[in-house]
Image (cartoon, rainbow, N blue to C red):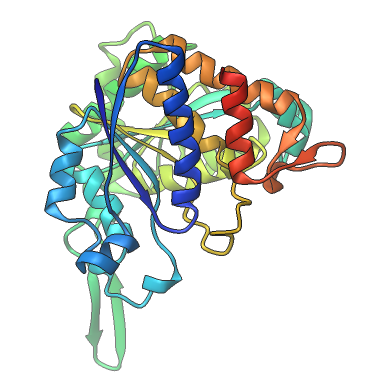
Amino acid sequence: MKRIAVFPGDGIGPEVTAQAMKVLRTVEKISNIKFEIEELLAGGVSIDKHGIPLTSEALEKAKNADAVFLGAVGGPKWDSLPSDKRPEKGLLGLRKGLNAYANVRPVKIFPQLVERSSLKAEIVRGLDFVILRELVSGLYFGAQRGIEKIGEEERGFNTMIYHSSEIERIARKAFEFARRRRKKVTSVDKANVLEVSQLWRKVVIGVHKDYPDVELNHRYVDDCAMQLIRDPKQFDVIVTENMFGDILSDEAAMLTGSIGMLPSASMGDKVAMYEPIHGSAPDIAGKDIANPLATILSVAMMMDYSFHEAKAARAIEAAVERTLEAGYRTADIFSEGTTKVGCSKMGDLVVERLH
């Protein structure tokens, strides 16, 4: 029995999570895997009920699960709250509490969606790389932060801090991933300007000595952003710090046709968390038009990484591809000549092909 702590969250989170749960229940029927699923609160829904974005009880249940699944958090309803009380703090709290320091974001284009990419088909056809983003340190977690009054004006400040041990563990994860792929790691930093990036580069070079079979190169973050548009197929595994990874992975999402197509896993010491990389999209919440495929593909990643059920993972991925091959599309990936369907219907279509 595999225990999964599920946080549907806010906005379109509950809608897309419901489709992921359909897939999980179907996997149960066609395999010997059984799941015990408990729905919990994080984000805005937790604020509404408990006054805080993540309770200690919910975090404890997540830490004792075999895997954690998240829909999305946030929305304009809670934008006026102090920064330490906003929904996003629930997400950050889960990541920190699980010590999920490595965010794994596959960037792979389905052949049926090549024409939906922002770039020319010949640039993205066959695209397949992974971004590893350090997830629990850096600028987003710097304790020295705030807005203060100085004379007649205000000053805002944040602090980016990395310890060598934090850099080393994400670098090792990147080299291990590369060994299972095309054996090439690109480390992204801003070492020409930032001291923290100079330490990043030094530590990554040191870790590389233990992986002589893997090629290592370095790029500044601005250059990497340009290269993702110029020649994205040059990359195999990209490893970078928290904020750079946040920005680059959203840029990379558009190479695949839609941010609604990219799953992710946040991995650490024991319990991994799985989530689509899109946000809560409150403007389309409740309209049954969200794309659930990133969420469903996150289930495939969970089968692979947490449960070591590669057969189930490949079956889910194949069901998604067969659904696209049959011409079904949600609004974000729709084009002339295909059939537009809603969020729930897309989930049903994937389940049909999974059977």
